[in-house]
Image (cartoon, rainbow, N blue to C red; front, side):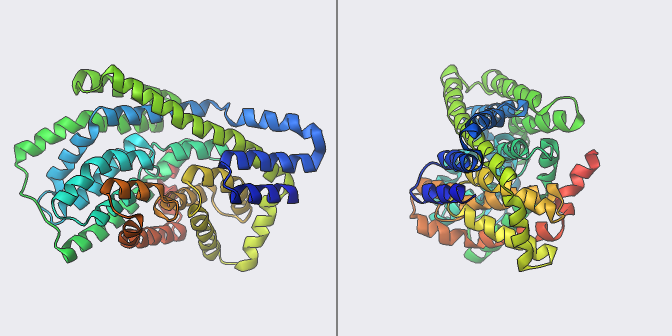
Length: 425
């Protein structure tokens, strides 16, 4: 066990890529356990880590999101949501959150949400008198709803790493937590808009509102295609993701008529690059996961957690703090593939519901997208807003506190994560 830990820490400290860290740590641990004969097993583990049929859905989800983004969907969603909130003080702030909820059903990735919505909303918010750092903060914080409300690339990766929970249950389990996060953001947004006197807009004429809804409706059907097919049992996740990509091309080319072959090719390139990163992480994480299982680290972790408290709630809070700390130095997917093989078996051994803990861990790790110093969505939004990262961090604090409240609620009430999946049984 010691060679693996030493290798892991040293490589992480010198800034080696996370995939390389996991591969070499597992290799060092395996070699220490069984010598050269373990090398063949490690190669087999890497292959098995990316050979699951479920993983075909990952590039399809990414491709669909890019197609919808390139096809101008964001403008139509913003127009529709602006018609809903236009007369309310701080309208664009609330639109930012509500658009992210709709967009979450299309992207499954926070950074895609940040770029697609931020490039439109942040300049407009600045033009109407919102503080630039506030515009960056609300955009970044609302974007992390994307991987919580299904479909979610992070959840597909989780279901591949820990095969004790179906991705269907994960998708269903993320609906209420994602909506809770949106409501928390809206609550803070309404309060700050009232306190700071942010502007409101003229009411949208009824005909304009109806037209904006009809214009956005074909795009909003995409999550219904994905979730409806999966939850009804008519399609597998892979089939639903493939059909969604075909549908996105069809409406982009034939209906909206702003998706051409150059944009489709660009979407394919982005999909290949992102998918390559995800699959490489999964292959190397399979090596580390195999070593964790063989070495008994998960059992030791469970014992360590119980030494701090016998209270199940406090144990969950302790793990959440650990996940937040991990999220300060690692992005979501690398953090997930590093900690999940250790923590999930440990928490199951302590008697926690696997689905409840899975959703809680995914939520907490995604909040790390706005946690400095990494905080990729917050950093991206700050660049779009052209404000120093430090000012965006300060502006995001009220929203971060709201997220912490949601974490406590999810930890205290498991039914928030497990109720909808239980209806599908």
